Amino acid sequence: MNSAMRRCGHRQALAISRVFNTASRRYTTNTPRPTDGQKVRISILDHALTKVNQLGWTPAAIEQAATDLGYSPMALASRDGMPLIDHFMDRALDETCIEADDQLHEFDTPIDRIRFLCRVRLRQTRPYIRRWPEAAALLAQPGNVRVAMGQLSTLVSRMWYLAGDQSTQIDWHAKRSMLAAAYVASELYMCEDTSADFSATWQFLDRRIENMQGIEHTANMAQNFGNQFSRNLFNILASRGYISQ
Image 1 (cartoon, rainbow, N blue to C red):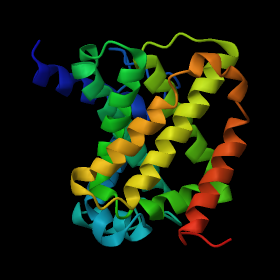
Image 2: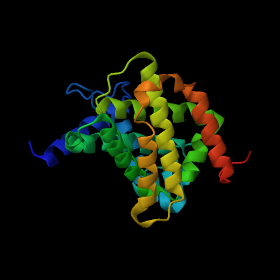
Image 3: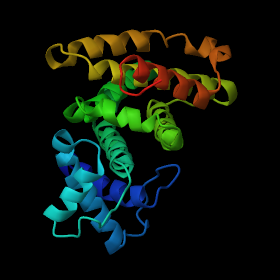
């Protein structure tokens, strides 16, 4: 099976598994097909992503997408842009897994695979990077932190899994906490990066990944993952004026 056919097959399986929100994101041939209503939701949110740079991560982007596709603007009524952000993060993880399936074999060590996976995932955000602080501000709101934590936890767990990690107990939590901190810091750095092709972001990411080299020996650095993430994210966003103290 050639690469294009494999990628197409993966996208179909990923779209179905995402709709039913399987915890492990394992893709099986007997996964139920999405209902018509779920297909409509996916199509509207996919189209809404093309509106983000103009309208932001907002209900307006969703309403405009629904109208463009011939549905009622209230077809996916929402008080904020969280459904669109959540959908994007699902899509971005899907695409990261697809690209990893094609190229991850080229890297010899887990830390090199982690660096590659972080770059792939950051490239998914790049088309929306000037609007991403708005999404980060929404994710940092108390009512949305659970969604943010769920997405980040799924992302870093999937990255370590794809990288071949088989750690258990405290090492498992330490690795995921440190990768989450490195990824979020790099994503926020990217929001303000004006260098050519985001070269400064890749250098920043490389430094964060290098700091993880001795992670097997720093299990005692693991802290409360949720509290640390939400506190640090709030402080970073507040310092840049994206949210008020």
